[in-house]
Amino acid sequence: MKRLLRNLRDEGGFTLLEVLMVCAIIGIIATVAVPRISSGFTVANTTKVLSDLRAIDAAVMLYQADKGALPQKVADLNDYITDIRNVKPPKGNCRIRSGEDFEVVKIVATEYAISYDSDSGEARATLDGRTASEYGK
Image 1 (cartoon, helix red, strand yellow):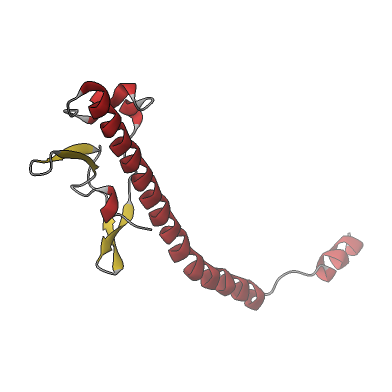
Image 2 (cartoon, rainbow, N blue to C red):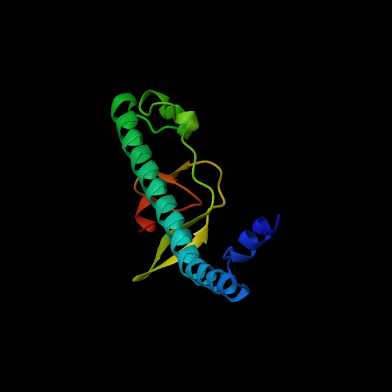
């Protein structure tokens, strides 16, 4: 029994100071990493929105070339985009162009839409009322 107690006393452990230092280092790393990860999600969302809007714009042009009319809604493009009903915008933030800079905005819409320009007769895919040219990385 004495031998067991002696062995336990000889065991080394971490001091309170060592544990606090490790916690402080982890905290500093977290304060640096979290904004970068959040920015990464914003860039990923923006890239997805751009890709989706460009694909829908291309499908609108194909639809118009084939049928001689403009589609009334995004669901009409089912023949041109595989599984169009599941093409949904991401949740979270994305970047839009604001002059020379970018502005981070929250995505509000839950689906893409088609807007029409009565002057030019063009139809464009939109998200929150913005076309692909208004989004940026």
